[in-house]
Length: 358
Image (cartoon, rainbow, N blue to C red; front, side):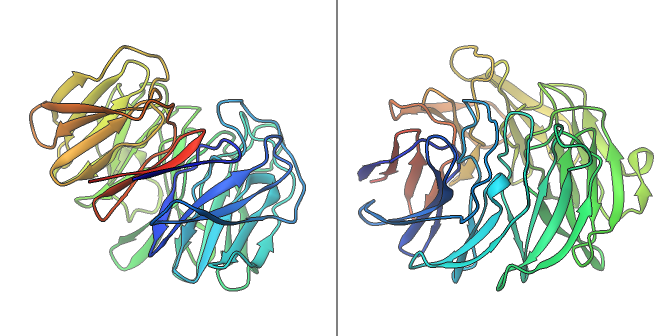
């Protein structure tokens, strides 16, 4: 439908609200980081607003400085910008507030995204190079005032917090360095923890059928956990687990009764029964490539879409058997996960924002 050239590269996924598309943006050297808005109908860039903070960080070239995905409540747009903190802007691009978080030196740079939970923004940041610098924090969504800030002992992680309802309470779940941890959203206190032993964790957990399902490590294990526990619950609350084949970068997808994931070290897609963990099928998607997928899969209209870093989208029939329907190509690299709204796909490549539809 349209294709708009981006000023600088980035891997953060697009989000859509009404007639707007929002992305995180950054200068090539990371000195400026912020949010950019585009017209959904035409792709025209409307504005870009940057954080007033000038903290910088080292990063992996593949990561860059715009790998976070923003979120919005329809009033403000929120983004976590690593060492330049958290910002909120209105739909006209005016900075509503900025919450600094101090210097950050994560392994390979930062890349986590914020969670909008009720009236607060929750982020976490694990970092190896700043002793005792890891944290989880909540900020008031209207003002940016810090609600709470709790230190973490975990060292490496790039995921996003998720919010779940478990029994009579809500829980904030983080899957990261060697453990999955649930926090009280009101004060940041730890509710329960499950250990898994894997040091580097990128995928964000998915939730369904009464389970929190999290994958970790380079083709490592996947755990399905019953939430609502207290303290150390590794031996009591893991409903099922797989030994290997998990994604390193992309998050898994829970679509209907099936859990889908891509082993991005071998280009192999796998489907499990989400309730029992029973293996349903495996199938190779394209050529074997180590770290060949970064985008997370998407499920819509009875199909599951896996997009690799070469810009190829493999369309599979959702269900209990492997059936590749077709392969689409945008002819550009792709690390960001696509957004699908109203029959149109919105893709961010390192060079363009594009809309694809009928």
